[in-house]
Structure formats: C-alpha cells, structure tokens
Length: 410
Image (cartoon, rainbow, N blue to C red; front, side, top):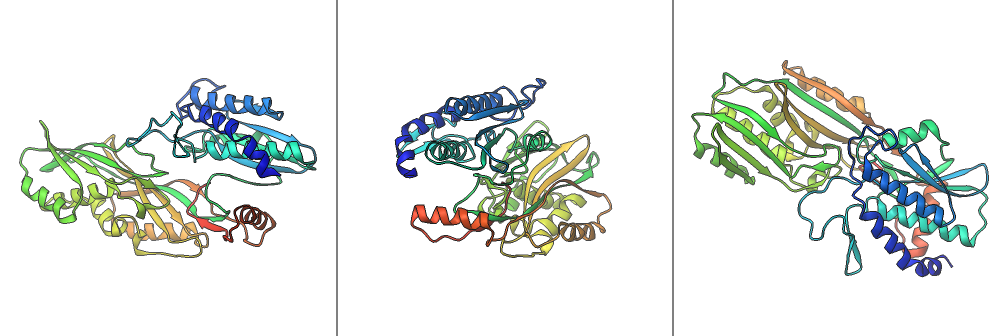
C-alpha cells in the first residue's frame, strides 16, 4: 500500500526536493533575530514549512532557529529530526552544487543526501501514513538550520518546545545506527614569533571545517633570505607528499594538497595539514630551529599521518579511536591546531585527555584546551525502536542487515 502511494507521488517529491536543493542554505552570520543563520537558511525553512502546510500538516516556525511539521493526536510524540543547512561548497563539482541536476537517476546537489533528501523522504512517508492510516500518536518532523556548525537550532528547540517521547534522525546510514562515538574538539597552541629564526612562518591559510572534513589544502608562507631549496624538495620527495613550492618576495610559499574525506574516517583521506607540519618540522630541524609545537605533533599525533592518537587505542564495536587535524592557524603570534577526536563508545573521554596531559608534561610552551564535547550515543540493538526500524527496512528491501555503529555525529 505505502509503496504504491509513494510511487504515485514520485515525480512531485523529486520536483520539490530539487527546489529545496536549489536554495543555497549555507550558514551565514546574521544580525537579524528572525533569521539567525542567514537569509538562505531561512528561505529553506520557509519553503519546507510552506510545503508541509500545503500538504495538510500543522506547521510552526520556531523563531527562525528551526521548525516542525506535524500530524496526529495523542499524548506521545514521535520525532523525526533532520536539518536543512548544508556545508560550504568546495571545488570538484561536475554539476553546479545547487542545480539539483538529475543524471542517470541520481540527483546531484549539495544536501541531496545530507540532509535535504532524507528530510523530503520523511515528509512524504508521513504524508503516506497520514492519508491511509489512523495514528494514535503525534508525529513531528523537526527541521534544524545549524546542524553543520554549532547545533544552536536543536538547542533552541529543546529550550522552547516539547521533546519527543521517542525518535530518530534520518541523517546517516541504513538500516539503522544504534551507537555513535563521543567526540571532542580540542586545541593545542603555542606562542610564536620566530623573529630570530633563519626561517620564519608568517602566514597560514587553511580554510576548512575542522569538525567535519579532512583538509584538502593548506598553504604556509615562510620568510627566509637564505634557504636550501634542494633540501626542502628532498624532504617532500622522501615522504611522497604532494606539496608545491612557490618563491615569494619574502621567501617561500608551500602549498600542501590532500584528499578530502569525512572527519569520522580520516583514513579515507589525505590530511593536507599533517603533511605540511611534517615537512615544516624537518625544515626547521635542518636549519637548527627548535619548535616544541612541531616536535609534539610529529611524536604523538601524526602516527600514520591520520591519528592513532598518542599510540593508544581502545577499539570496540564502534571502531577505533580516530583523530582529524582540521585546522591550522597563526593569529596574534599564536600557532595552533584544532583536532576532532572520535572516541569509542565504551572509552571515557577523560582517559584520552589524560594521555594528552601526560605527553604535554615535557612541553612547557604548549597549551591544551577542550573546545567542544559530544557524548556518545548508545541504544541497545535489542531495543524496540532499533529492532522496529531494522525490521521495516529489511522487509521492504528483502534484506537481512544488522544495525550498525558509526563515528558520529548525527
């Protein structure tokens, strides 16, 4: 029954999804209290709520932070939680990222999978149930606008609206995710001037989302009057890194090229920052320059270039501990890196941080700071919710898949 209903709505659903993808809802700073995440994020919210209203649902705009689309009656509330914001556009798109171009039965566009496509699919699944069944609960699709940044949308919802009795987020993999690692975003920094050094770092440019992405490119400008270009080329060649060298009026610019991947899977990518720091460390050593920051990174963080953190690991059913160096900067005479560390569900965050503190005891110039924390998620495989979601998926797809654990964070 439901499959036939959805098939009849297929073209309508695709057309509405294309319109939603065509709204470039990337986060923008805003002084408008009614549009806290920018004009385009607000347009996406208004489009989705208007569509829900036209389809016969109850809707609410929650002060521009988020909104919901709802049907049904009853004390219990089933929540479907998705988001309409998308990460910034990078290079390498075959089709314009906000064109929602359809090729070979696939929609190409920013947000098609994360998370506009799943949100639209959820809306039409709700419509199918509302039109064909009597439901003795309320079903609410909650849509946020700040998931890719600070989660301020869902924090605002929790302060002002009713929490679901039970719920799930259509924002990851099938058949169902029952566990996600805890995540800490941390910073290591050091005061740096380099004025008395033969080679001095004067600028670092790495425009990257430190929480979500293995960095694809990192640029560093060096001030140097006397340097051995052949030595630097040999260092890069030894590691087989893709780093180009450009001469400047002040000295050199190094441009490190990596391979972008999700921060939850740093081993799928090539970290442009890690490559850069390894090379800078060896350049400094070659020129008799002592730098605690690079020495610590090389000894404790950069094992296999992607972070077998401090040579420790506590693998469990959710996988290995991973670390992604997502940001590298030089500001106000301070050099720093931001790290996204994903910790297996049965490992305490404090246990990992203690390893950091022990290693830093030998580095008096370095400072460690935890910036953000996301606690692990664990719902038993035998729970009613997980078993029901998996059963429905397997019945519809004639499969026998088990629930899975991921690096987070949905």
